[in-house]
Length: 238
Ligand code: ADP
Ligand code: MG
Image (cartoon, rainbow, N blue to C red; front, side):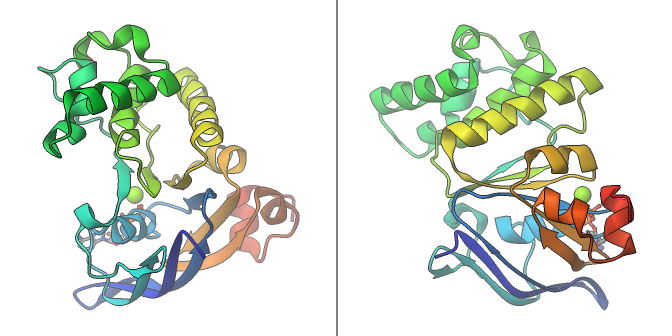
């Protein structure tokens, strides 16, 4: 059974079609990256999976459930946003534990889950700080921590590194790769950065004007690009 499956998914904004019949089965634990130029529909597709954007046609399956009409809160997915959206007046500990507190969990459970997330993300020594006293990369990790505690079926990332400077982007790319190795969760990640895609992905989905141009491993795309668009985008010598 796939973790997440898109079946003939379409998105229309009024009479403009921006997602044009996408079929894709994502396996459990897979790291899948959507790439493509600005405006090709990456964010829209991710937001449809998250339930933040209605699906005009087609189906979105999560596990064996038809989740097409489910609200975001029912989908069990974690969306990690580009902007960190942390609560400035709360400590790191309270920021990470917030979703659990909202769900009415006990202090013991919250402490255990927050401790576990902090260990995975190496945030143990920052738990009593406020977001303003953290670096950009640390804030990003707190945001990820807030998703981890809910044990999501999958993590969805929309260009999570695009606000960071070049050095930090390389560091965080490495952190995300390690996070995937540690958690072994399904991850769906949007970027327009070929290097990010080539280094992180198990499979890359190249989008061209709302359609899949090609799906394959980084190596397959590099060695056997389906067309000139993919070749130029991936930078392979075709
Ligand atoms: P990407 O993330 O690949 O840059 P988007 O998914 O943001 O692309 O956008 C895909 C297309 O859909 C673009 O042409 C964009 O202008 C259009 N679009 C996105 N959101 C809306 C909206 N709410 N209303 C109308 N058009 C939209
Ligand atoms: Mg986008």
